[in-house]
Length: 72
Image (cartoon, rainbow, N blue to C red):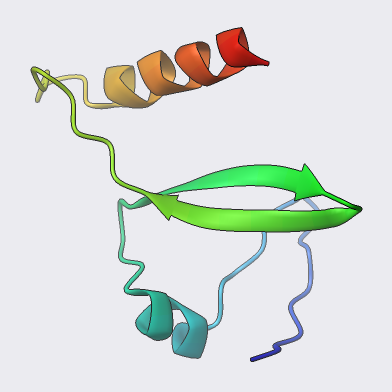
């Protein structure tokens, strides 16, 4: 499946509904972004923290990002 999207002035893009539905991507889901052979690869990831800080759930994403960067 191929869809054409346009990048906004802030570098944002919208995933078309047909793609979100096919991959079961919902509001609040996280995508891992990588570059392989000149292609941008988006992959849905499940983040299952040991303990969720419901008052600051972005902390979970920051911890994931820090671990990912440490691997590179």
